[in-house]
Image (cartoon, rainbow, N blue to C red; front, top):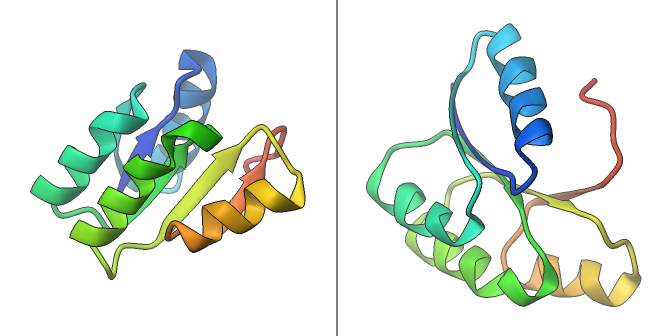
Length: 103
């Protein structure tokens, strides 16, 4: 499985990369969520894990528009209901609120 990981925090990005690679997945890791839309459009990923802030939902909408079948999990630092609704309305398939355990 080929996974796109867009995580602004380098330590968390490395943690995710290591965890997915330990499960024998190929990982493309970047720190810019906005760049994820170009990578998702231009490359054949099986899933995407994106760290998004509420003002970056356009990046999620762009990824979803270009890859309707791509499973997208959002990592979010906020957990209020309004933000969750906006994230799902923008096209996320699932949401993990930080902090979380890889398992």
